[in-house]
Length: 544
Image 1 (cartoon, rainbow, N blue to C red):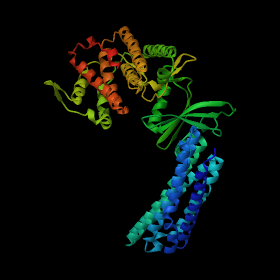
Image 2: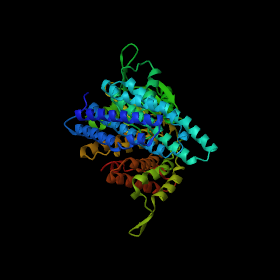
Image 3: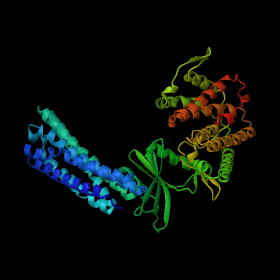
């Protein structure tokens, strides 16, 4: 894909400017002199002006006419390359300014810098060819220079700090450390350029380490990574990234999979959750194709599931498809709960969960953090007081049995395959034996919190929540679970209030928070021992 002419020309000029600056930098560290330093320092604004021109050309091209996702990705990452080149120019100038402050040049050890600076200069020579050829291997080679720069930094840091113990010239050595730090940051800029080039090559913004994690996962499966297409699917709230991977197996057949990486503990929990579902209820969870650990992160390559999320069915498909998806979901849940039912009582601890999340709620909606008030002479307790009282009441109404639950049962974690009329689950790191009301309340509120205000769609949203409630209530009656409705009140209160931290629309968040408060008031008004008599106004709660 061709770059705009202005972007291409100014990027070439910027690389040429950097080549000259790096040559002068190398000359200075070969023979330090004030004149040599000035050759770089006096060109302070030129590189920045060239980056500004590249940025302006890319932004202008983005706004002109209709552009594809791949073109937008190209323009965005070319801007990123130019920004990192400008940063390299700044780092060169700062390194020389600090070097000029070292009065005893011998303490700087300038001869040690020449090898690593030559590596940086050589890496810059590869940027334009890698961009023009869309060469992922060259992009990787550019980024791998960061490891060499980091090793150099570690060696010189130990040298300077050792010298500090043996001399009184600590000011010179402190300035030498500042020079060293600017050079270390050059490695970060090279990695930024590498990531931008890789993103253009793959077709999705990708971090350097994430790319190697992906390759490690692919090498552990029966797929190849030479012809790789990566597309973003989602970013989870826990920080994990989820992407669609298209590649070919050793036989050349096309394979679609899902790549998920993130914090090792989270990915490990996901893997354990998938394995547990395979043992407990085969066919519901996707197959794991490969798993790899890398430092504090880990990654999974997971079977791609046919179909679409329940949220998509709710917002985009016709009434018949939505009805079929609901029927499949209700049937699947009833079957799971029946098969996995255990006689062990379960405590949902919804109020404890909510208490732990209220700080995050108040950070997004500080207006909810109010104390007690009086309305027409009637005291209205603070929300924290309601939570404390409800937490005490909740300990008296444990579920009479446990079932195996999803644990994060939002609309977008349920996949419906219309061809097979089958339900599948994803994002299973919180699966465990628990009160089924946990999943019921989360699913119902994940419907309500959708920020779609179109009237007919809001009716569909409300009906979907009510449908799940009717199914769960039937299950509760059949199992003689008399406190189902009371526990649901607390579960819904938890989900309504805690979900506001993901809703920036003030009016919508306020409606959710008021529902949470109403449910707590309603539950606390029930006399002790009469919890089984509570009936929730579900239709009113989920109607707008």
